[in-house]
Image (cartoon, rainbow, N blue to C red; front, side, top):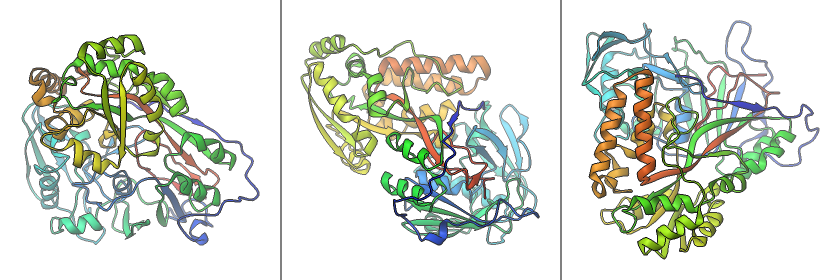
Length: 522
């Protein structure tokens, strides 16, 4: 896939002589690396310290969607193929070379010769088949990514055969999401402490920190470059800032816009990467008048999204003009646009008899920053707006994922691009035959005709290539914007802080998580 648009703002070179803020999340010794890069013989040297913004208790690659686990697993686990997350280019990882196409609907992949897990156990096709079974289990979030696969079998101990239901050009990209684990492992073991074939292996995992060291059995193309990777789990923005200014981390995930100047002032580089992360409006289409597309569209017309970007996010986002962001190769500006128009929204609400709503939101800090303006704009269009803010788990478990949901409108964040930028993955995450359409939006049952129309467009687009595929994905984006049961207000720019006085070779990415393969410390 083509590289995503990116740029970097380089900070002033003057380093602070003394930093007043104390360090968070670890002892002083942890942040010190006395060697420069890899040793002359290529051996990994030094410690790389990462300050991450998310937490989790599930590291099982077949079930987790956590930003923390996904990011740390990139260094420990492998699929047959992996993404360079900075560009979404696919490269062979546990596979020995590219997929071999036998026919339009059959492919073969060979395991990397002499590949071993970090416990020294050889990898065989038996391990892959067990990993496939777990990842595509009916209860797995990943199952929806593999609807095109009819069967996966082992030809021998090192060769796998994939038979498809229909031609599908992006199979290697989808296979990135099947990480290989030992067939003998239990789900409980993989949840707490997964064993993989990647360049690093976990040494410890706690609620506050993760450590990984080189996998001595790794024989792939991206060997470990540091002696230790240390992730400090620092959800609080100020804690990550303090750790950055105090010198106990080298890379800071998710730098808030308001803190960029402080990070730059400490001699760090700010990397800004347009991405897929967004705040969306989601409607309960099982409840009138939210079953009417014109009412849903009116909510987007009522909100001054450009002002929301400028004031709520300090300009570090792009108001959405389609369901996919502009950085996606399949992006098309939707035929339906949501230009700010208070009077048009007011008329639509009046026609529907809508005078009062309850807006439920998640309690993420950056979502909370949006609420005052969203409430003000909707009230200017004639609605009384009651706001209920809560943890994501509460919003879904108690409001959206219930059989007879009574909520009106939800505002929440989302970003499935951690699984790839294939438009099928992005669209299917929210519009597949899954919990998002079966419950949450209830669009599958409230408007079965348009739901089926979208599913048909996705199926057609997935079997095409080049301009024909892009045109069909454009039709899908038009249909989503016209109906808008779930639609983004904007797509955020992902902001990462890097201490380039200590780190070489790091690139920020357009999704959550930090990828540091090939990164060295000075």
